[in-house]
Length: 244
Ligand SMILES: NC(=O)c1ccc[n+]([C@@H]2O[C@H](COP(=O)([O-])OP(=O)(O)OC[C@H]3O[C@@H](n4cnc5c(N)ncnc54)[C@H](OP(=O)(O)O)[C@@H]3O)[C@@H](O)[C@H]2O)c1
Image 1 (cartoon, rainbow, N blue to C red):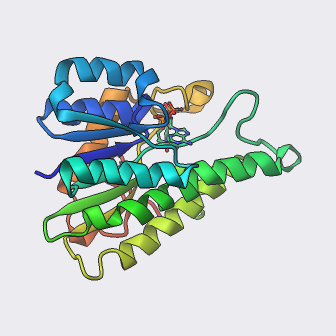
Image 2 (cartoon, protein in one colour):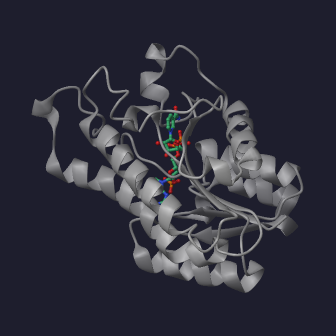
């Protein structure tokens, strides 16, 4: 099996997926803004160092994405899986808006840069490593709250809209990137509510809270079973389709 790249692997769901892939014997590239500062990646390097390559990549810095592609290509050539996991819901005093009066343009732009533009730029530069004649998956980790049809509560303007934009980019990529490479499957995934720093302030309203390990297993099950018929789908942790 060709190597997997997990973008946004320093902690949370991304680190969980890297750990599970390494346990299963896969070659893995883990990217984050500063891999050297990640305790999770340091621990995984101790046990699986020979199959783990860590590469710096900041989705808000296109030059860092280009440098990451060069490093991955040198080591592995092509990839069998790329998961865009990095995401932003809150940072310091800034977080999801409850009402329109809380909307701040700078925060909207930053959320959009990390959650929507970031994964698209990663796809822009890494697509050629996934476009080959063997099976490959490009999976963008989205969120159910990014579904326009599923929005029944309102609020969370920046996060919802940035994930909705990410979803449109994913759908577009599923059409363009697979035209000459029908073995490539492009997906949007909803992990459910997972016990990470991102969800920590909002876990009380969750019906079910998954551990990182469980969420990683559930997402990898979808990715590993994905076939060309799944191309362009928005899929939840349990395999159910989510309306765009
Ligand atoms: N947890 C949930 O309940 C839940 C629910 C639905 C969807 N999701 C989605 O699942 C994904 C992972 O979330 P999580 O819960 O694992 O979050 P998390 O624990 O907060 O981790 C977020 C990750 O994103 C990275 N990141 C943030 N800004 C970045 C940037 N500019 N460039 C590169 N990496 C950046 C962080 O890296 P640094 O270490 O560099 O900050 C970290 O690895 C996100 O896309 C999120 O929207 C999560």
